[in-house]
Length: 130
Image 1 (cartoon, rainbow, N blue to C red):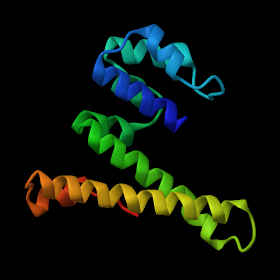
Image 2: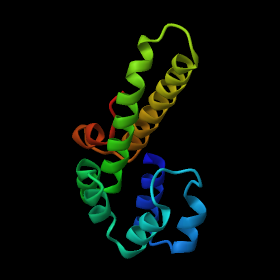
Image 3: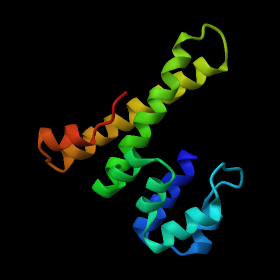
Image 4: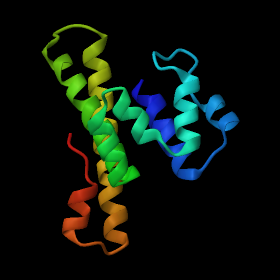
């Protein structure tokens, strides 16, 4: 799933070993864990993603880990967008909580960027779609 791919990407970036990645990944995943671990350790995560039909995710990782994080957040936002059409249910509450967390994350990105005196264009690159 997306969370396992995010973990694998971070581990590949930090050059973590297979045992560390195995402990970090979810036990209940639709993805073949061994294949994902091997791709992450060998530095061929983008090839793995392209083979699985996830070209956009592979392209985002090729740009930077930050771009991949933005891509993943955008996917989640698109997924929970439909929950706003549900009048009653747990989906609406979960979508609300995610949106609030996303807003907090965006404010943190902006404040950190301002503290580091980044230009407005750099800040816009780092802000996620909500």
